[in-house]
Length: 195
Image 1 (cartoon, helix red, strand yellow):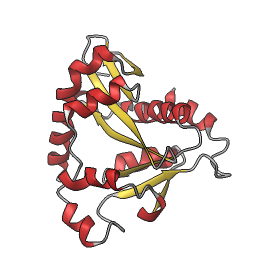
Image 2 (tube, one colour):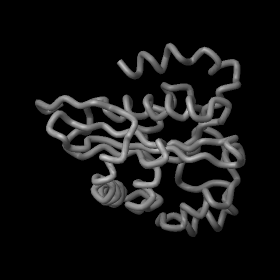
Image 3 (cartoon, one colour):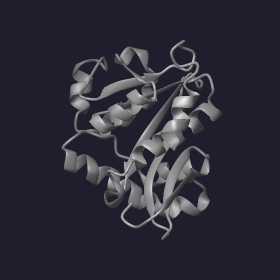
Image 4 (tube, one colour):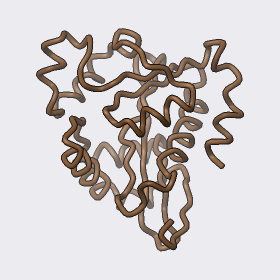
């Protein structure tokens, strides 16, 4: 990885110093791709870190290389893996795949019976999620919690989502149901993703 090694871990209080950089990179990345994305605040990132609901990759030089966090919805029936971002200099090295596997494992530990979902316009994230056992679904199969959907207000595609009564938008919804027969024995797949 460009001469650097990294460690992926559950984020802790000493990583809150990266919150502003992470938020700026999430927004910058969305603008470069020309895609919509829900904006995050440093306060939200710090909150997720302090709640033990975030994963971070740190290089041997002490830089953040990647980040992702989880949120739960509808009395923990659903969990979203959100805010996946890789710092530009560490992209295209398999780090996103490893962070996704680690955040998925954290989601499964904290909310073992929850359906795990995400919304994305990124083909790379769609491929990673598909390899982990997620399936594309219609929006009615993911959380209907108004608070989740309010997060989309800062997205450039908010008007599209509203005009379609939250039934679809430009993002693809992907869902992993841990209770489905297909996913009951998915642990070996996730372990290989981490390697």
